[in-house]
Length: 124
Picture: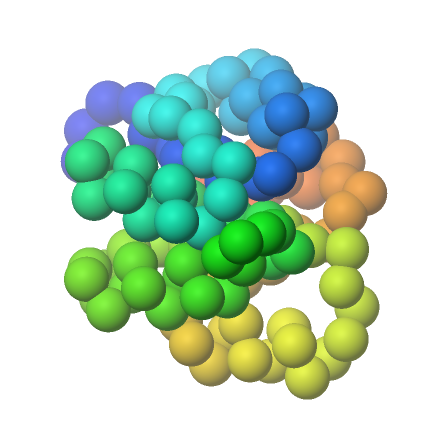
């Protein structure tokens, strides 16, 4: 992993969720590399910013998080994408892991859980 602050791309169609996640991330000592409101924007921002980690919402329009995750991983197989979701459907969660997500965080989330999960997937 690179030296210095871990850079994270926040992807969620809710400005409120991006703001809350942003606060949690910066308080935990991570840096916000950028934000995106849908899957298409996430792909563009990922390719431009090359963050260390993506926090990706699953349910978004017009392109959802699963499609965006596949597209990012097709372009960069080393991308680390952590899904953030309200979905408790085991099949969908299994699909997310199968396509290459490094894990998932359930909404509603706690500040401690997010920081802990980020450190876990980045091997800190």
